[in-house]
Amino acid sequence: MKKTAMSLLLAASLAAGAFAGTTVFAEESSSEPITLSVWAPFTGSDGDVLRELVNNYNETNEDNITVELDIMDNDTLQARLPSAVSTGTGPSFVLVGIEFLQQYAENGLIEDISDFWETTGIDESNFYENVLEKSYIGDTLYGVPMQYNLQYLYYNKDIFEAAGLDPEAPPTTLDEMEEYALACTDASKNQYGLAFPMDSVWFIQYLWANGGDVISEDGTENLINSQENIDTLTWIQNLAVNEGATPQGLTAVDADTMFQAGQIAMYTSGPWNINGLNQLGINYGITAIPAGSDGAYSPEGGCSYMLTAGADDATREAVYKFMAYWLSDATLKEWSNRNGFPVWSYSVLEDEEIQANDILLDVSEASEIGRDWHLNLSIGSQIDNDVMVPMIEKILSGSDVTECLQEASDTLDGIIAGK
Image (tube, rainbow, N blue to C red):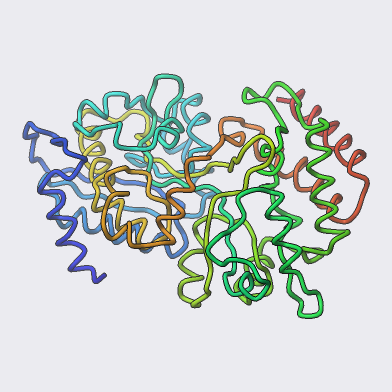
């Protein structure tokens, strides 16, 4: 969609108060000009779309609000933000991953915005509860969701059909996923049924599926060395190493490349690969992570807008107006259509254009099995880097599963004790 057309569409929606039947900011506020700054780590192509949507707001809002977007890499943002906020030189608000919300709140970097829904008149019930809750700590709201994502199962329909599988019926259980993976594997063609990257932390979804886990939600209890996890990891090792259903020494980048080349029938990834696959013309489908004996789960991710500490009333009001703009049907629809991220607004999900987009509809419908993977734990990155990845690398290399789990458990004990 051209920028001019998009601007007209969004402006019309805002003028109509397109917030699921509510009236936003019923009382007129001051028209004094105000400039807001927002920091965001959107350095990819999604950053271009974000900048366009921010520019659209600047051009169409009638409240004399200008939002200046400063995009930087995440490491730089995280390093700069604490001192900038403490010295009063930071941004008016930030757009960052929801995994930082608890840390920011504990360190006094962001404001309580629990009055947001009442102030704006936006119907909170119009949005998926499991998405909204990630911006709350207890009953206190600290962020307004900007996007949401899980891991999904991508599958190549052409490979399915060639293997005698129904290309419109992806696996719904781990047993079916194994069956399909073996049917699609043909080493003579360098074709594999499944991708198990050695550097991935997302094996947690398979542990959860069979009733296992790694750590308690509060980060105090080590849960990794269980029979459930032994059984699941043994299943993974057998499928990958003994059955040869996945390439050896595979990285996550390799998995992307091989799936795009038609060499892998199934793999898990987030929605950020959708646009690239569409552009390449790959005949693919996307569905929810298959279920194990305990059900289907997928680790959650996403970003929220957060008001930085020390905001005065005028800044708070202006930031709320921009947040409300983002939650409009038109903006959320534009973001999902252009970036492939799931819809998490019930009113947007009913949109005819969204309903006609099979891939986006499948992604959105698969987004109700999200589960918190150490989002609120300060030791989350240590668990990924020092426990999960080394354990998976060894298991996918054929090492003894029980010994690998014991080693991972010992490492996790040390991380918990050192908190």
